[in-house]
Image (cartoon, rainbow, N blue to C red; front, side, top):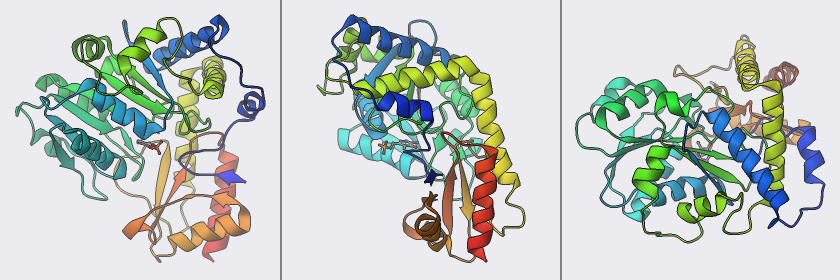
Length: 353
Ligand SMILES: *Cc1c(COP(=O)(O)O)cnc(C)c1O
């Protein structure tokens, strides 16, 4: 089986070695050391800065998105949400459910988010911005620098869902003034699903989290941060996933973050360069290294997805709704090489004949 999906993704053999072991009891100093090492390496790779806080949650990425809204904002805020696909739209649904006022910057399908779209909301008293920096449903990588400058000039806090982008595209919390960054185990970390992490800048923690009355028990950041001081979590964490995470972060540290990012860039660019002659086309907007969306002019995208699955045990990512016939997404996250690209392009050519 080969996965070109967007979570779970193709895992590394070293992760399977971890996954076959007994899950140990975790209220121990030994486990605390593992959690603290993960925290140190995550903060290093994200450039989280002095006084940053790390929250380990046992939930999928959406749980971490919801937790961030619940712990950092309330009905006195006015947020701006970049809504350019299903994940951006999910932030608006979370705000609706919890009564957090917002306006959406709608990005029309197939179009790049522009500075003009964002600056329509300049100087209007917004308090925070929520963005999925790679909108995984379209593969668009938004301009983090432009959004960062907008937040700075408007005094807004900057929340980045980097669930598919972390370790795939360069992102520097300090340089960009990011106040909360979210990731999840089953995407670019290439682990099993069930663990999500939120990194908070010291500014976010001190100004918006520390003195807030909890509105959720399971997802309360302050109880996580309090327990986290000794490398623990308030409730049973995804213990095995923490061990998988430790191993993956050690691996990235060994090869070097720069090399990991360069590899991701190389694999994505190589795949895109090989599309020549397949009849499949790319969108015009900027793309994340995590995923390549492909347009099928003959409307047979879903059939190709099914044929690859049934006949070759190869999984690409289908789209839902109106786009099912015309778009599939090819994920590059996880254990992928240029050889995998060659194999998949050959299959596309064979199946499309
Ligand atoms: C996958 C993903 C999520 C979360 O999805 P879950 O199914 O809840 O893990 C959120 N945001 C982005 C950008 C994603 O790619």
